Amino acid sequence: MNVFACLVHEEPACVGDLVANLRHLDPDSGLVLYNGGPDPMLLQSLPTRDGSVIVHPDPRTMSWGDLLDFALDCMRFAATAFDYTTITMVDSDQLLVAPGWSAAVGAAVRDQPDAGLFGTTTVSESTTSGIDPLTTARAESHLWYPILATLPGGTGVYPQWTFWPSTVVTRAASDALVSLFERDDVIHARQCTRVLATEEILIPTFVRAAGFLTVASPESFAYVRFRHEYSERDVATAMATPGTYWMHPIPRRYDHPLRRAIREARGAHARPV
Image (tube, rainbow, N blue to C red; front, side, top):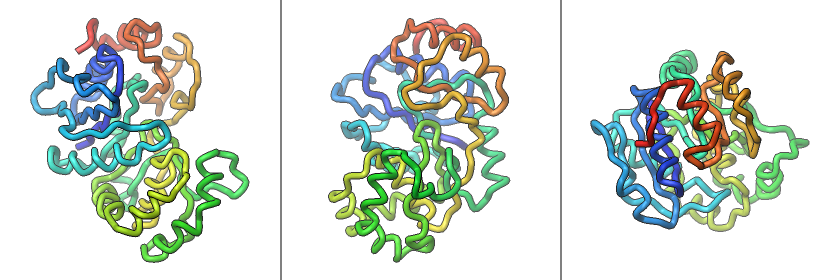
């Protein structure tokens, strides 16, 4: 099965909206809610249903640009709570716009049994890429090369990158990542790194280093972008576009026109969970 790992940190009504959206459009997936914000009471009033929605019992406060521990915590916890095959990373300002996500991911895993990650890129970015996290990562090759040299993928995999929302990691790769990031040398390197968006660099890099493939996601990413402003017309177009399952970013206001348009179009729910 697929599990959604959802990082939430504000606006309880929007957290309920996200849960209702995921449960309506992909009821076969499990769901872990991870409170990465400063308010420990954020999820107290949110009901869980039939064991498919579980609140992470020991979350840490997250900072933008360093969500690696959120991912690892959810991988570790999901292994105890679900018999899962894939875990999909979901931001609090992200919604499904179409059904069928877990089926599409399952088909991708069957087609690519050696894959460990499904994301936006399949190979190392070129040295001319201007993506900020990659620029910082390249300057730190000396920090990571001694570690990568001990792994099947070697130093040639460094650095990898994928845009984070809707990134999928397989269970086998998740287990490998949890183990790798408990190594003393990796812990030390993390303490020294200045990489921006650790989750976007280190997760795909270590998936490749562990000997897995990184493969193009079944998500088109046409409507999963960085700080983009969408219109209600974009919602309708996204819903009609094959290979489009997600939209991000969606402002975290329950009454925002984009959220309302998705709720009304899909008949998901009239009120937050």
